[in-house]
Image (cartoon, rainbow, N blue to C red; front, side, top):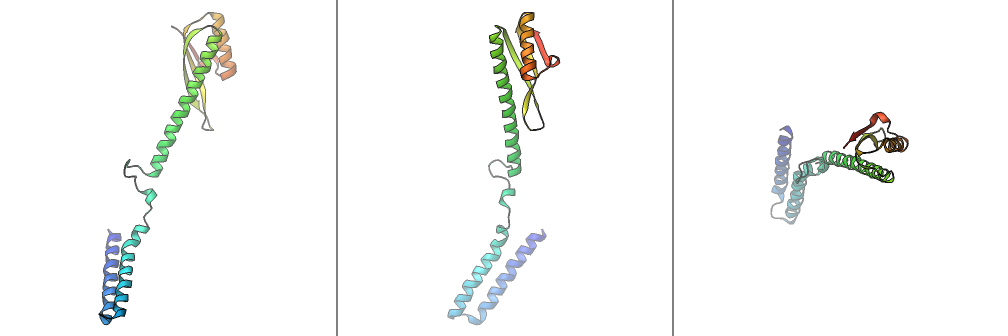
Length: 158
């Protein structure tokens, strides 16, 4: 509220000053010049606070979010996309390995975010039918290539 009072007092003082300067020169050519300069001064006094507004801190009119909030939201979306991509590529690789071993199985992969901001495959669920030899062969490939130990491999007969 103090800022509004200060702003209004500045406008009133500036208007008073412009009027006071015009009185002795009324009707003369110099009076018109003083009126022009006074109008410009009054306009600058009125607009100056608008120039100090940080527009990036104001909420965006359409979304109602500040720039920092939009960046955080974009970061979260990118993280989700990256995680989904890692999961999809891992499932695709597992399906290729299963096809080589002539397995009819489906996969579900969980990822883990590591320090570097990257996602790595962390846990695998295998659902389907297999022989003990096929299970051992695929399990070894998962341990060797994806570095997922047997404790984090869940095998479910389907």
